[in-house]
Amino acid sequence: MVRLSKKVEYGLIAIGHIATKPTGEIVTAKEIADAYKIPYELVAKVLQKLTKSGLIVSHQGVRGGYALTRNPGDIPVSMIINAIEGMQPVIAQCMSDGPESCTVFTVCTIKSPLIKVQANIERAFSTMMLSEIV
Image (cartoon, rainbow, N blue to C red; front, side, top):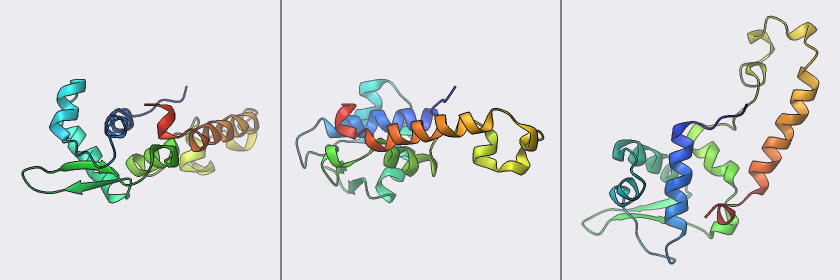
């Protein structure tokens, strides 16, 4: 089963929360952490990664916080996942770590079907936009 990490889950929650606000409205990490009862430290780290990737912008100061850099309809979920994890979730270790990580790779009978499933998962994440999950 494909499973998203807690970082990705919290990242999707955080950027989704930001996306629900009117354009230009600033949202703080504390506001997000409090609203969803998730650890502030983890929210702050995820928001830093999203800022570094250019998906959100950070505003410093007393009235500081975060805002989207573009329309939610222009942000694929795959871009959010990549910003947080550096890669898309994979369904088999050999797909992320390479054939040498698998002792049965050369005789494996399920790798071809799993590659098709992986492609469908990647297509789903790349075609689903942030606007669809808020």
